[in-house]
Image (cartoon, rainbow, N blue to C red; front, side, top):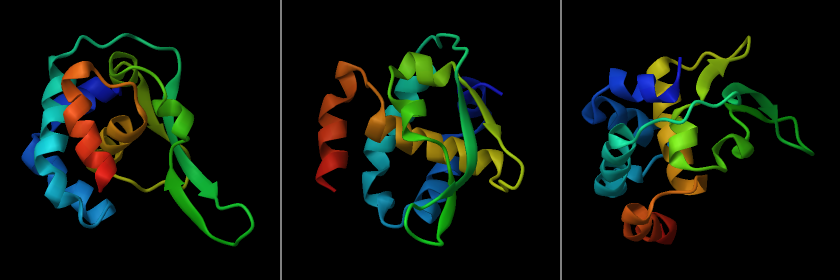
Length: 127
C-alpha cells in the first residue's frame, strides 16, 4: 500500500498515540506533527518505483536489533515519500498504524519538506 493511502486510512488522532508510544515524549510536538500530516494529505503523491521496506536491522557491533526502514527511504521530497509503497519483510510485526506513525516521523526528520514546514521542522530539531 502506498504511504499516501495509509495516511488517508487513519485520522491524526489515531496516529499520534502510536507515535508517542514509539517515540516517548513526542506528544509535545503534536502541533508540528499534525501540520506535517495535514500537509502530506494535501499533496499530490509522485509515484515511485522505490519503496519503504520495514525489516529487522542489526545494530553494528552489538547483538541488538530493531524493526525499521533504511534512512535512505526518506531522503527525498515529501511528494515522493508519500508516493512510495510501504511493505514489511518476514518477521516484522508492526501494524499498519505503527508503519504510518513511523513513516510520518521519519519523513519529518529526514525528508525534504516543503517551505511551509520549515518553522515546525526547526522546532522538532530543537527537541
